[in-house]
Length: 305
Image 1 (cartoon, rainbow, N blue to C red):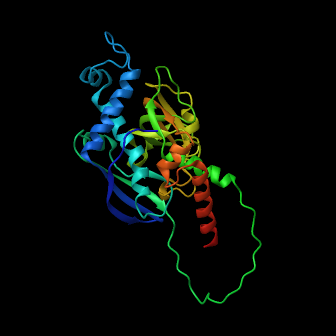
Image 2 (cartoon, helix red, strand yellow; image 1 turned 180 degrees about the vertical axis):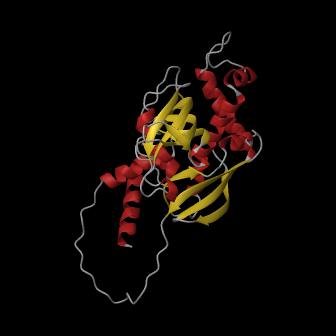
């Protein structure tokens, strides 16, 4: 778990289509400094710099060795990981699932990070849909047999909380992409010809530079993650995919395509332990037993609505 104590706020909230809200989260100037110091210490422990012992590399030497963009990128990532949960916890947003970074240009966002200055970024997250009751409902009587509660639902909710509060670290030299890791890659999409070769470029929405790809089934087009298993930093892989029949862009529904993916970095995804400290981080409870009870109560409440 992170030891950085975040002072964050939600500066704006916007309703989006499809039962989502957009939030702008701001970390104050002290937090950007603390997070950068934390990231530098973590890099210092792992980096091998000629002439220096691990953990004893001067900050400017380390920054030059690793690269300012990589360090600031990791700092932005850490701010996202530890501030989103705290901001949502302190808000009145009745959210579902994981937040998603809402930004068109990740590189531009990283360029806006300056330690010692406030840092803002946008997220979007699913919320419970608003419902409208039509007709008379008072006085109706309903008989229903109560189903036994499935404790696995709590386990699944805890796994989602773990993922939401996870962090990432650059994987060691020679690492290969596998399920559970996170890739940083640039990619371009193309229509697939009948013989399987590259055709014309897909709409620019299918392109991206230095984006993060979570190696997890079901998050992207069919075949995308599976086609990246085994790649290494520096590899350029042509991955065949098929867009879902209900893809948001009508012109891409059911389309077979090829994505040319250039792998820039591979990261390990670090999940926090499911212990009492985690319960305190994500809720007002002091123990995991208390957190499980809270999740169960919320599920019971939602099932009765």
